[in-house]
Length: 380
Picture 1 (cartoon, rainbow, N blue to C red):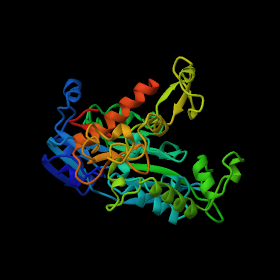
Picture 2: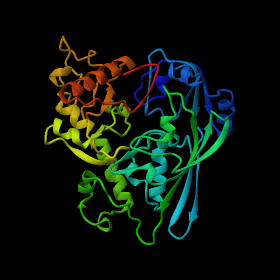
Picture 3: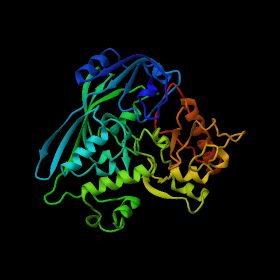
Picture 4: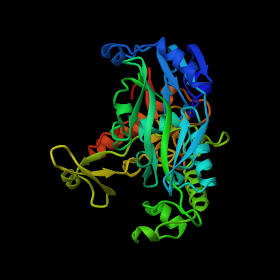
């Protein structure tokens, strides 16, 4: 059952399940599953589902009528580059937080703000995983991947990957969960300085406050000891239910369910003045863009923490007061971005709560939220 291998703990069975414990085993399977044409992919007719840590994935209750390829091979190596840099190559199946811990223990700067994020390393470049003002595009040198379109291994450098906010070439060439590229390894370039190992400059106000730093100060004044930064990030994430804990149902989720919407700055006049916003560059036609907080929009639309529970916000209590789906699924009681399994939810239960929150935001603000996890055999 996919439910046994995903962090949301939902999803039906697969017709076939293969665990690849080496890159060679993975390539052997990939060679037998060429990339379908675009129409078949759009219709969800790929025979292959690639699984890493299962943290950003929501599979239907019917399961998957094909082969699940679980990338279970790990390992990492490091090579000095110049006087103050180290390139770290990591296998796709290596647990991501173990990678971060390994780098922090060795005084390597660059990944510390990404502590506590669940999943496997092969998934992080796909979503351009990020947190607390940092994302992996800032440190990735290259990705080795199997290109299903040409049936061969390719190397994609940072520029080739065309990173954006929670986006990349890898993600944009994935259609309905069907990937063109399957990541085999990722290489990061991290810094290693003489003296006590310090973090990269802290950009995120919440993390800066937790560390006793002024996030508006000069970059040189916004650094802290690497282990201390990791510890504070883990604490912040734990307080939001964003570090896996089998005994805490607030962590039974796909992680953040919605991405922060990016809109034209001109649209801000349609929103309340107090709406949090962050500069997001410019569109292709030169319009100034801003990024909004999906969590704030959800909360302000009446879908606060615990939305979907009988004792949660009124909008989510359901017609009979027992919760939208009988309380089986709800927004986290710690953080409004996570749609959580309260113990015995189905995939459809999670989607019901997510749809309700999305619809409330659209009705109140005219903003449509988009899902972050990959949806297999189901739709929001």
